[in-house]
Length: 125
Length: 107
Image (spheres, rainbow over the protein chains, first blue to last red):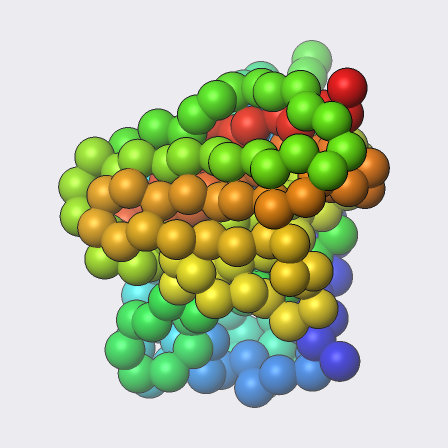
């Protein structure tokens, strides 16, 4: 059974940092790209960024709204994806989801099939 | 960046009605389009991927179509449990982009 479990959310002051974890099981983690998606209170879904699989170089891409402040990484031995969030702003307040992106050597259109339950991040003074 | 324009933003329909939601991409995304259902306080659930492939376990009243820039999600006969917000997502290029969402309510 595929499972993704986020952790690390909480209340943090503007300008501070927080690291979220996404612990996975039930699939070959290293074979898949992993995305982070967030949802501000009462708003729609916003893609935050992703990290490619091992075979695709493990490189990252980010939304413009977080570029330079957020960093995604992965520990393929522990099957965990991370979202390091620095210089947090009030507008980063959201529920953060990790999701299983595409697998395999080339991008394909079977992605985002499994999501974690989300972890809430509140940025406030 | 590719913009996803989803319409309508909200709608009200009766049980048994046929419901259609549209997403338009600002550029050709081939069929790298997925549809999600989200109920309040819950995790988004994938309904459709590759524009028209039904996710395992999703009722057959849901269907998707389209390619290129125009896509539709259809609920053939609306059921009470379908009251939710629906999102499209393009993942042809980065940044991946979601539509604004369509809130479907039961009359």
